[in-house]
Length: 281
Image (tube, rainbow, N blue to C red; front, side, top):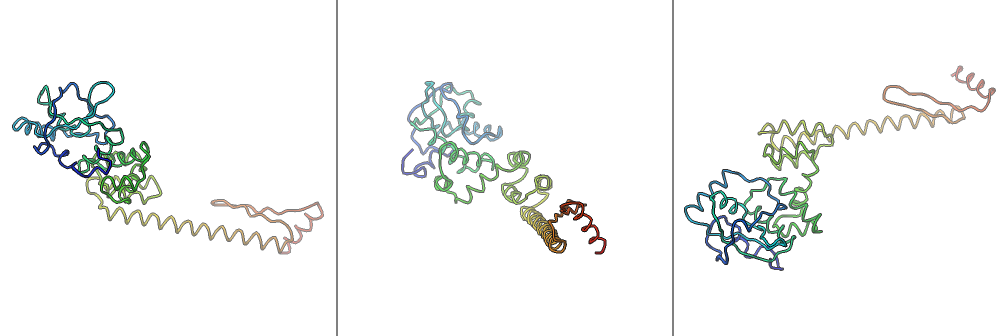
């Protein structure tokens, strides 16, 4: 990978089956292994089969980008779909381009390859960004510049990983969109979040409707907190008033549906005087 960035010259590496890159070498299928850490985890059998048909008719015109690894074999950097299609066809050898690449460079290229094709689901994309941040120490801003996204887009993608596991699975399976996922982040209550996600499955709720539901939930929580604060202030003021009127320490202990009034006294005579005062009140 050129140190100046990943953009220049990468487009020709990422097309599935074109003849724009000169073939430098061939390797046996058995010498090549996929990168288990690459961001894309799901491959459509239908898409691989269609690519295999293209390779059967035209040959593999676009080499697979690989890097040598310590085991003596080669690891796929870009082109796992072509490698899978070649295996499906039973090919013995495939054209490759061999490059010396670090783990970070390999991950960067793998993410960009998939993003340019738009075939990462939202969670695969988020995990890819997160690995660059956590494993390779990149900032969100650096990742954003590398993949041609805004910093906020990268930040919002990574935030999807904080959603409940059940909702993360919905995003992985395409049951809800990334837009739904971002809107669901507005909920504070996990049960309500999941219930709303279930309603949104298969178009049951639009992204805008989920956003409105999250906003209503937040407003209701703020209103409740405000009411609780008013109640708290009332008890504090009552403690101060009783303390002044009775001339002693007073504590108002309150709960959800009941409370207790605790009055301080010093001896029997003081208790008798307090009781007399309360009786007169």
